[in-house]
Length: 269
Length: 310
Ligand SMILES: Nc1ncnc2c1ncn2[C@@H]1O[C@H](COP(=O)(O)OP(=O)(O)OP(=O)(O)O)[C@@H](O)[C@H]1O
Ligand SMILES: [Mg+2]
Image 1 (cartoon, rainbow over the protein chains, first blue to last red):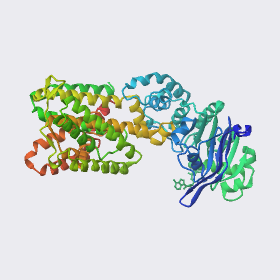
Image 2 (cartoon, rainbow over the protein chains, first blue to last red):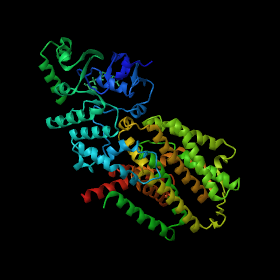
Image 3 (cartoon, helix red, strand yellow):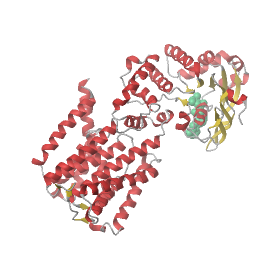
């Protein structure tokens, strides 16, 4: 059963719940992400944001509930197969292949689509034809000069940029970004925000981010999560005015500006 | 010169040494070294490039040795067909055991492979075809392709060298292939590889089968060289020995495991007169290597070469 309203949403979860030995990390979450939008998932530390990502990408199995992607039930799929459908995630702790070069890192995202992944009898020079595209992506992220370093030699901000470049190399239909700005300085933040905006032109982005000024400027819609449950949903202006949101962030009632600063401080500390 | 060129240069140098070796060293000893060098290199494909510690590789080495010995001695296969049969049997065994083991991680993977290898061991002990405690002795070396007389040690040495070179080349190619690149990605960061859409179990299984098959090729060749397949080949100590060889030479290096195997075989040969003390000596050498060269002998040399090039 697929009605027109349903297909407006690229992701739809219903009653999504995850319990860890009696502790409910995600509780009855009904999340809808509109196709082509940038949707932010925010909330205090431990709210269950990363767990939500793990459930949607099947890195964790939900205790209850269903997940639909493009109207298709993906609740029973394996994580690699979710990625193959075009729903690709990044990780909260930057995820690269540390002892491979930047070119090799990005190329790994290109190899599968190019059919260069099972051949053990061919020389790795067969991969050279992917170098051009890999370099293109690296220069988009200001990493071209470092292309032949290994990932472990990069600064934290650049590792995140590399991770994003690798993710985008897959040309995913939808991106799940878990705190893409964490650990970055002001300049990097501005650049990565621009890259996300560019990447989102023809795809959907669901993003966890503590930097609320980034959230305010980038996202079309915001979902606030607290103690595993959806607390509020709407535009930044709608959400940031709600007393329960302020309270969740501050513990007590305080100004929204304070909430933003608090969250920012928490992210950069 | 980059690391890969250096690697090729060292391998070419070693190959020339191997060509000349039987005129200096007793050929049977050299052949033993080559068989174990291939065995350790095959094992390293799994531990060094996928990060999976198998503690049951003796089942492929020993299993293949028994099949080759049986097909050649009892069924009258020519040596090349016997080696092929043993190697194929190892491939099938690796596929069957790999499917069971590959889903486990870390120490559980080691335990499952050990348990499966023990089952193979007990089969070899009990089965009417394997000669029990005696093993299968007096396997004729025969004529390869009906013309090359293998009873001559020197001739056999070059056949074994050809087999070793082939097996080593397959491993080298695998490591430096598009598939090898995916294996490295899995070893480096498995969740990230999954999130890029790689069904990692499939690549691990493929690596396991390749590794087991080549370990089988080593065991089959050994059966022809020594004209013998015995319980020693399939016992858990053999699985342990290949771990030791690999660590000693340098886990995850191309040449290291072969170097480690050669050193261990040399040591066992030199200290033969010490009897049980061989094990103690071996243990001491092993502990010293692990303490002094964390990356193994070849690993430390490679690291040193990288340092002076900077
Ligand atoms: N594998 C696990 N086992 C047990 N508890 C877990 C597990 N993963 C997460 N949790 C718990 O679930 C809760 C939600 O964690 P989660 O990582 O989803 O929070 P988050 O919103 O991403 O927080 P942060 O902003 O700090 O990243 C936390 O209390 C955490 O301790
Ligand atoms: Mg988190």
